[in-house]
Length: 382
Ligand SMILES: Cc1cc2nc3c(=O)[nH]c(=O)nc-3n(C[C@H](O)[C@H](O)[C@H](O)COP(=O)(O)OP(=O)(O)OC[C@H]3O[C@@H](n4cnc5c(N)ncnc54)[C@H](O)[C@@H]3O)c2cc1C
Image 1 (spheres, rainbow, N blue to C red):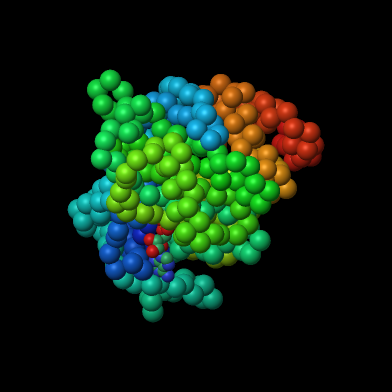
Image 2: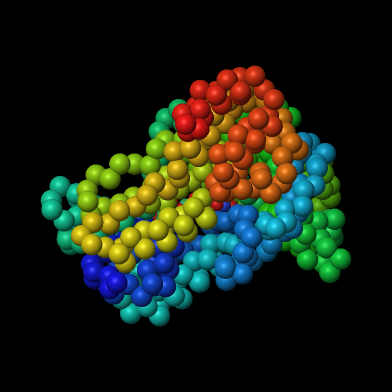
């Protein structure tokens, strides 16, 4: 089928906007696509990681790890992730790849330094004084007050000696990374270190908090220096830092408010609130939207980014976490210890079946958890 050649505006050219541009270029979409990006230029401001069985499907990957560690205060269990690997890219690599594809695509245009807005009051959406056949909005939104937050500071740390050698394989390539190494439990937050060793001497150390309020930069840096002092003592240098604040709220995908307007990305419900992972879901959502645009017979429909059952499971976790912060470290450690790693990775990646979801939830023998589980999940079992 030949797609209708609509003029499409994409507001925001970050992770989801660029994924959509790539998906439309791949499908040789015959219409014009214009991406508006508020930033005048890109910076290497974030790393994206995810579990995948197909690392070759991502030409912009930087590193992969075949084992992960999860534990508390340096005492960590090792898990082999086969057939998955934990894979990592960064803004430079992914955005560079997307920009190169856009540069070669005659009908796709990127306008940097344009802070766009949209007016949906008329028959066609308007933005920047122009009427568009279809507008895709990826502009991030501020989390509502009272939302549980995942907030973090990642430091790229260099050591003068091979202090990260235990994480490398015999050929010196990265083999293991640390998904969660919990700090001592607290009643108002869950805190853990996330460590991606890139070489014997370099790694990303990310101090991550789940809590209702953010903390100052010095709090993260104190947590970082305490961790380095306890587990990797000796001199080190922080080369650069990245920061993030992600909402942990299992709210439904927003309703469509105009037939020619759609919201995607974290704005469109693609972020998994219990983990903060979104890269793969945004890639899949962009592919689904590009398919719908290609099959456009007058209306472009898009399924919810995450199915209702997955949102219900997240809601259970978040309900539990928000009332039992001090149990958080135990909850996550039990999930890893009491499930085959493959099942848990499918669960984290939203590809698990209902049966697997129930097995994962049942692996956490906590009474309040079981109660919430029954009330929230049973409707989906009918
Ligand atoms: C530091 C960091 C690390 C992360 N790590 C991971 C990870 O390891 N794995 C994972 O799966 N997820 C991760 N995430 C979560 C998620 O994948 C990212 O936040 C992702 O970038 C969200 O994609 P998005 O398209 O919704 O928003 P963004 O990528 O933020 O893109 C939105 C774009 O809109 C632009 N914009 C804003 N306002 C306007 C406007 N008015 N007009 C035009 N443009 C505008 C912004 O400048 C931005 O470029 C991370 C997030 C952060 C912040």
